Length: 190
Image (cartoon, rainbow, N blue to C red; front, side, top):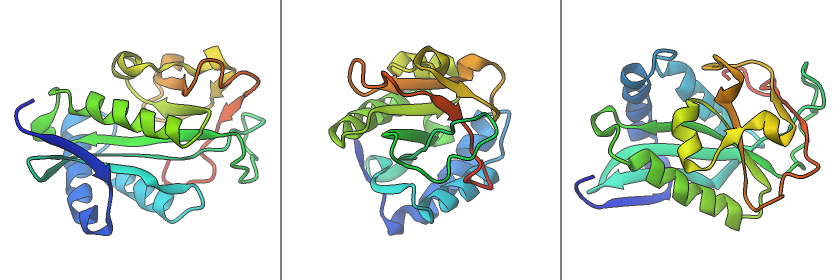
């Protein structure tokens, strides 16, 4: 990666850049989204009780926004059908979305963002992180298949196989005794 990368909390002034970034990142970097649903999800999270402003970040390379990611509270459901009732007491956060500008893919920006973000989640006292995506990438930053932790997928995109739903403990054993299902019924755009 050439240049100086800095990662900081997102601010309202960043929203327009974040929208452009997400559209290009998902249109050019994935085969499952053109980014419009991802933007809708980000806006929905920001307007919900699950949003954690201090855990929503942008990455800048020489002053240009080249990455965006956020962690939000995520209640596990007791059943595969949902019905978590809005409980946020599990101490789990969801990492979604993660976007790197299409012109800067595969330069280590995503890994750098996630390493810093995972540390901030740990410092904030959360027990674990869930993420759905490319396990080949997320395994490199410490995520493992969620079922290893008693947390089971129910649906989703790009949920092509169970390894796409992953979790990470913030401390060894921090997810002991936690179990449930990943159900996105609190969001319309997930």
